[in-house]
Length: 159
Ligand SMILES: [Zn+2]
Image (cartoon, rainbow, N blue to C red):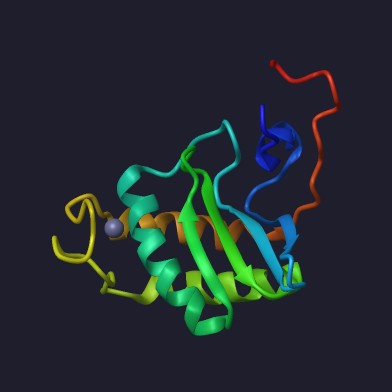
């Protein structure tokens, strides 16, 4: 089986909300691509409703680009506890944290979700701005940290 970074993360030893470096990739030409785990909900203690995670995806995809140069991708995790951010170039976790906090603060004020139409979105009726604001507020109030990666010891995962 191929190695998947997140399958080696001990999800019981993290404290959300957090920003974690999930990987740093150096291309054959020497360019750096950095990947981050932006976690809003504590793993296995709840998850964002599909409408909330979808609306936050739209708002973060747009809003993080206002605060950060080099955003390649922002995508929700299938477990609906957070998002992955892929960034063109090396950047420190605390810079990502600051941009995320600024973007979530703007989410609290917004009345507009970008890209919500049958033309622009693959499930445009599944949005929930109020729930998105609830999760943004809850995370900001709890306070983001920079989370170190805690690996599952070799041999102790289920498969
Ligand atoms: Zn969409």
